[in-house]
Length: 315
Image 1: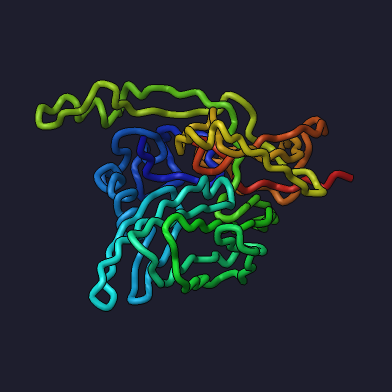
Image 2: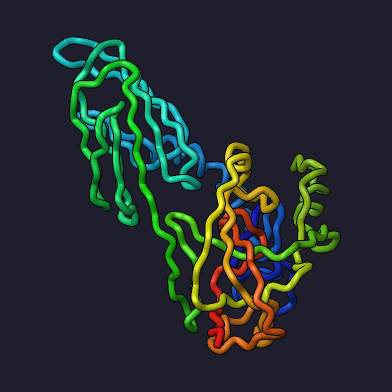
């Protein structure tokens, strides 16, 4: 489903008469075929193949460069002093849901070349191990340049740990980040099919378009409270769900790859404005005072979400 306008604190996605997006249509916050404009629907599918073609690997005169991490295989040829070398590298990882990336090199014969691996600026104590050799630590924000003679079936393991951070936002709100992920609270959702003002239904009536019957437009509203503040002191725990990581679908909030647990409290002074969440209050007022455990999931798993939380001082 496409959505033209979205929010970090998106507590409902529905057609509104006076939207906060003053330059876009009333349906620009809904989910569907092409809310507001059709440009996203037409161009969205280009993202993944272009990422694979241009964003993962590159090569230079010295060897291969890994720019971004994703499970894949890459093959290329080098001619050195008239000899033809074939290089294939298999990359296995659950990044960004885990911090380990493994590479296996396949060669038709021994070859010397440089393998350059990007160490993100946010990485803490990044390390690389080749086969059973000792770990080598690397500073962040560089490309680790490993120039050596490589053998068939050599293995490299890269670890790029990241720390959990609480980032300050507007009105003293806090967002929770473990690079490159940001976590959100996802209230229970109710999906309502749009019968009126549905672009999918309108286009389906036009014989020039072949719009499948399963393509629909949706409003999504919360079925549970979303007005939560985090409770000081801010501490959180991340739990991995390996079974969900292996079968991960980006927008499946029922099977998230990670869950972050943190203490929160429902508050009474956070309302809607133009059918959107107001800025987080700088002085949150507890509704009942009952502290509860909130389960947050990666932003990309959510349709409705709170990502910038007010902070309640538990005195």
